[in-house]
Image (cartoon, rainbow, N blue to C red; front, side, top):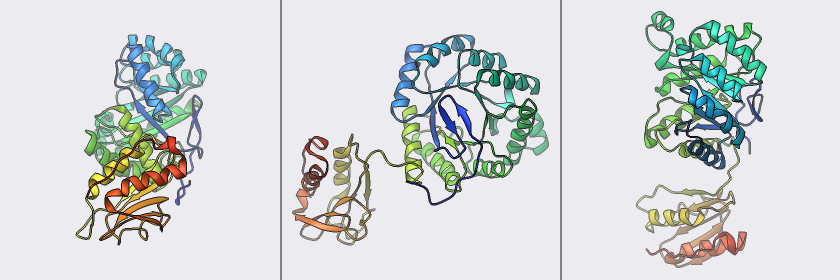
Length: 368
């Protein structure tokens, strides 16, 4: 599956075995919320994130105890690990010694250009990548004084300033991010930087908030940029279980046709006065029936004949309710009529014919 829009050309950056940029698929990542020094808990979460589809995982490295744990985490992790560093560049040096595949630093709090130059030299020697993570909330004082507030232009200028320092050392394995909690500011910053450099871009909206609002902010901000061809890796930052970040990141890419689906998709109508069946419970039952199904099929659950086989022709299989009967259809063609209360059972039977009894072992009916 490929997108109908062209992606911004970018250089390739290697993070362990994962390539960011250079035409590689957009990479999904998240961050652990355990104490990194708690090796067992952190490794368990890393493994869960990887199993859910996370391709890179970032861990906080706030102290020496965390760097001491990082080596074992790197050895045991199923995916490359990124060390998240603030305030103490020495922790970044130690993280590289422990095998971090990438180090994320924030220019606003990392201690000046000399320390950054030394980090570049050490990262090059270790074969690791770096991410310059510019955040609106922690811009350097000089940028705030010049621009008056943390604007998109200020974030871009900060990133370019530090890129210049890094390039003087000959280091090019760099990823950039320019995040704000404001979606418009985030979009503007990435649009500006996209035309000024070919480094790969890590997308995200920082401090996006709890699950519902954070999902909206991430989907709008990240989705808008990806639809414009901007972005090489992403994290949907949420105040929630990190597994939700992976799930939502995957869905954003699937919706934009940047990743093929790996599970069923349910499409359903919004309901109106024509709806002939209690649709919401039926949709929920279909979703439950499809849970765990490994087949990336599109299943339509529609509420009336208008939103039936015709409008849901793109679906592989679907059900809808007319005035007196339910319809089961495949790719827009009606293959069976049943009483409305037996629609779920009929759908399940048809899916068993398509994929085998073991794919849908349960049973159920829907009552009007």
